[in-house]
Length: 244
Image (cartoon, rainbow, N blue to C red):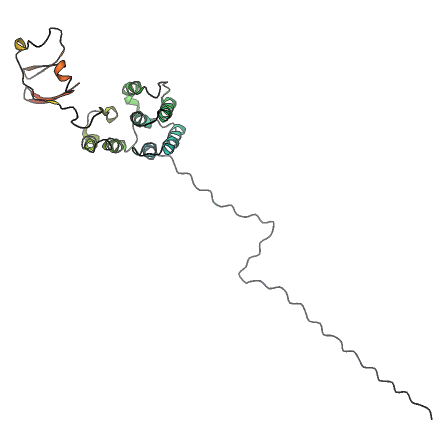
């Protein structure tokens, strides 16, 4: 008997089913950025325009000012060739505490005027300004700034200066501090008079301030006025003020 060999029937290998790889997804509101796309630069801040009145307060806001702030304001004034600041600079030259800062003020004045006076030559700067007032117009707000400056010495100065901006016949640039508070030197008010022949206390060459109004003749001796610096009187029925 012959043996039978059993052979297993071949089994077909199932074809594998391929699964597509899903595409990468992105948020619907995301915007792709190209790597070589240039970024938009941030806006450059706009420079603050120069204004004389602002520079005036920056340069000397008061007696508690920052010297760094003052020096920066001086540089802006010089760069803008702002001649309206000449009265302000001359004014504060007396109040700035340090020699180096006064020299910086004088340096700015020299640049604006072409004059070569030193920082401590306040009298010369005042004389120069007095001779050139027709060519100088201070910044808007100068009367208020000056009243504020002098009020730091004594609040009563504002009483004189603020109304003066509206009716004064004297340029405020020429009004300067006398070194004392109001009434620090008492004025001579309605003094008594002698006949000239009775004034034996005077020498023949003594100087007097002579005044005649409506036939009323007065002589105010300099030696008397000098101690008061100011006379308030009535002559010929008219009120008068005499300053020395």
